[in-house]
Structure formats: C-alpha cells, structure tokens
Image (cartoon, rainbow, N blue to C red):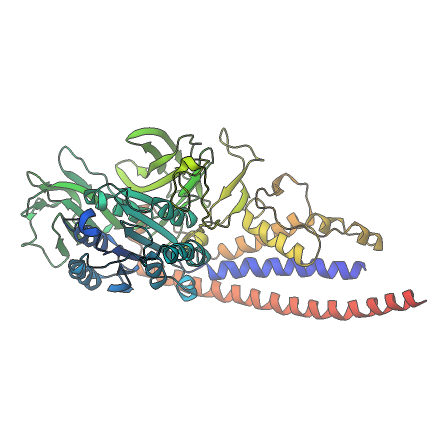
Length: 621
C-alpha cells in the first residue's frame, strides 16, 4: 500500500512539473494586442437623441485612436445588424476605410435588436485562442425592441441577459455599454456591463459621446500618454518614441498648425511622408512616426490639445483586478516595465522609476500614492476601500525625472443593493437584477503593510491577465494561487489533500488518515504560506527551482531604458538563438515528464488489480 501511495505522490509531482513547464512554454509569446468590436445603434429614435449625428465624428476619432496591430470591426444595428467596417487588422488603410464608412451612419431603422447585434459580433473559440483581449463597445439610446408585441420583446430581453451574455462571459470578453439619453434601458445595459466587468455610462446628450467613447477605449487598451501643458498648449517629446498620435479638438478652427521639436510649423497641407492627418467635423487626429524630440506646440486661437498617445521602447504591462466592485470591496492594479522586446527591466534599469496612482470622483481627489518598482516581480498598488457609489477615474503614472507616461482607467463602484431591476422597474420597488452571475475566483492577498490582513480574502473578477502579463509576471509558487490551484486540482483527482501527502508513512495505517478533498470554496482559500513545511510545499519549491532554471536562460540586458533602444543587432540575434535553445529544452523536459507519467499510470493500474483480487478473496473467506 505504501508503494501505491508513493507512486501516486510521484505522479502528482510530475503532473505539477509538466503543467508548470508547459505554462512557461506556452506563455513565451508576448502580446498586448486587442480585438475590439464597435456596435452603433441606427434606430429611428436616434434622430431625436442625436439630431446632429455626432456619432459620426465620435466614431471617426475612436477608430483613428485604435492601436496599430490590433483587430477591430464596426457594426450598425436596428432591426438587423450590418457590418459597415469589416473586421480585420488595424492599419492605415483600415482606419481610412473606417473614417469613410462612418459617414454612412443614419437613423433609418424601426426596432432596436441589441441581442441580434451582440450575436452578430460575438467572439468564438478561435478568437479566444489568439491570445487577444476581447472587447465590445455598444452604443444605444433605447431598450430591447424587436416587435410591437410586448411578450416577444420580453423574451428577446431575457435571451440577451442569459444565453447571449453568458457566451461573452464564457470567452472572457468585456462589453462596454453606453446609453445615449436617459431613455435608454439603463438596467439592462448596466447588467450587461457588470456581468462582463465592462464600463457602463449614460451620455445625457450626444456632445458627451466622444468623451465616453474615449473612456471605454482607455478601459480597453493600455494607452501611454504624455502630459499636456494646457497654459501653453504644448507637450514634450523625448527620445525613444516610435510613434505618437495627437488629438486636437478644433472648436471651429479648420486651419490648425503644429510646431515640432525643430520649430518647424506645419498643417495638414504640409505633412510629410511620416505623418498622417485625419479630420472629422469636430476633431483632427495626427499620427507621426519617429517624431522629432523637443517641445511641440499647437498653434490655434480656439483649438485645444486633448491627448497625446505615444508608443515607445518602454512597455507598461498593466492588469486591473476589477472595473466593477461593490461598496466596501477592495481592488488593486499590477504594473511591470519591459523593453521593446518584452523583457522585464532589471533592477539597475528600474533605478529612479516610480509608480504613482491618483483617483478622483467628480474632479475631487480621493486617493494618491507612490511607490518604487520591484525587480523581477509585479508591482502591486492596492486601491482604497470606497464607501460611496459612483464612477472613479484612475490616473496611473510611470515617472522617472522628466520622463512621464500616464494611463487612464475607470472604476465603477456599485451600491450593495441594486439601483435598478431587471424588468426596468424603479429601485424603490426593491427588485433585484436577474443578470447572470460572473464566475469569481477567491485569492488570498499576501502581506501588505497597513492595507490588508494576511487572512483577508479578495474576490477577483473573471478578468485574466493578457498573455504578455502572464509571461512576464513570474510569481512566487508558494504564495500565488496559480500553483495552489494546480496542487488542489491534482489532489482532488487523486482523492487526497496536499497536507496528507506529507503524512504518508511506511505502514498501511496511513490509509486510515486519507480524506477526500472538498470542492473549492469560492469565498476564501487557505493561506498556504502559513502552513508548516509539507510535501506540497516541497513540490512547489522543486517546481520553482525548475522554472527559475529555465527562465534564467534568457536574462534581461543590463542597460538603462534609453540604452535598451540602442542594443546592437548582434545581441538581438544571440537572444533569439538562446530563446530557441530554451524552447527546445522546455519541450524536451515536458515530453520526458509526460512519458514518465504515462508509465507510472500503467504501473499503478497493474499494481492495483492484484490488490483488488486479494481483497475479494479475503472477503469470500
């Protein structure tokens, strides 16, 4: 019997090693790319809620700000959905097509079939397997309206909030909903957004539409911005920026000019080959490749600089634990810095970098904190407990002297009692929303001074880190839930607990101490870091050593962020060769472990059969 349990223990260890090494292999591909699908309501009621058709310039600006290399598509819907910008790779040609196609939007539909629109633009398993972050931005001014029959409308609404929404939840996609005017079905739109951990906002009028579009975009992509000096309408371009996108609100000025770092003045008629200038009725969007370093200035009497997005040789990897929380619930953000190749900056390169986070509600600051970056691990910033419902704006800044990059995010705090019911009735009737419940994961947060006790559990939304974040955020095996989840899953499969692995003895009496593992509790997990040394922790240590040995094959360069951009091609070729050898080593380890695991399983089956036969003979006697 001891031999049997020993073999099962070895099988458990090998399974954990296989899963850990396989995860390291599969997460080598770095990707912060997005798949964004925009749905625009063109029902007849839009003639009243958007009389000036401000959806057109808002959509034009939104498509021009989508990051190059992402995937995107645009649909319009009323009675039935219709593709107006085919889904594809975002590049200059795609953006030009989107700008032209947006002008075709008109309010000619009779009904508002939101469910059909979401089904038409839905994601599938293939979309999910590409490793992109999946997002929908939905704009409507009404409620689910597919017929003049109220019963049919109710069935369509129920289908929207159950099977259709569940499909988005299953693939991990976020749906950001925007209601144009208070006539929109706020209960349904809020339920869709909250069920997928997306953003929900109401634009009182179409003038607010672009700002909400941009807020939804900020919650979708990690967009680095440089600060604008409003008094001078200027901003500073530093070396190392590959491209930048300037967004200008024209305010009636059709002849705005820019002064670049060389003090050259140009407009849309004098743009160079490395510049792209797109105009809409309300805004100009200028994309410039390899901008000249120095002070840039907007020249106009009425126009204003709205934002400057940049793509450089410093990557900011960001994961937000929640975009929707309840009053009194905690949340956090994780940030790491990497070079243009996706390698984490070393401790030397991180010298001088600080993470600053501020939070405001209605322009009133409620939180500000700063901390230094940690090498080799994620830098986590815990956000405060918020006791007032509302929409909070987060400004996440990476600072090193005059080097400043900011990222904007939003956090919606919901009351403990739903404000609206699923059937659209008032909150005063004390109905509750019947929206599908998002699956949640409970984790124990490690020691965090003056923020959270070690035994306090945090419920985290279904959001998972991007493949880039998963690949770069190497977590400590004994204290993070990924490895804990693997140990628990294997222990459940073998009908033993991780703690009992350390209690196996050479006597058959050990079998009496065996206990079936219970189903994981969704509200709290045991903090394994507080347990004494067990076989499970020893296995975790072995896994950690193996992962560290593999990961150490490719170390980050010992240069400053600016020096990283000047790395020679010889170093790049050497890194690629070294990465290829590391991949081969990983696959060899995985293959060998799988073969050994299969052999052990065969042995286990054969050894268990005689034991069963002897047991039957003993019973007959």
